[in-house]
Length: 51
Image (cartoon, rainbow, N blue to C red; front, top):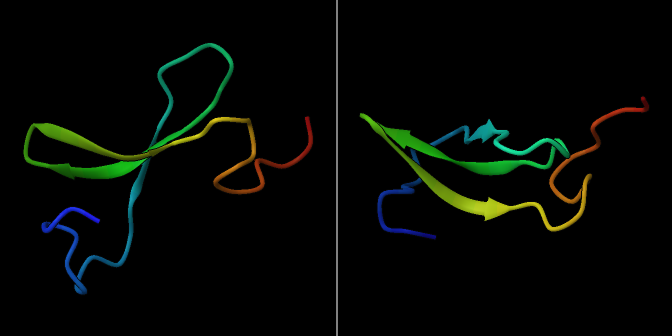
């Protein structure tokens, strides 16, 4: 993890930027969204529920 992900960080944020609804997981610090993980396949990060 990047050094700014310290033990006091309790939550990361989800951002969707594409039409297939896959997720970018990261942390926003001021005006920058730092991407930590990009979903390769829909559902890799968490269960999105059924459609």
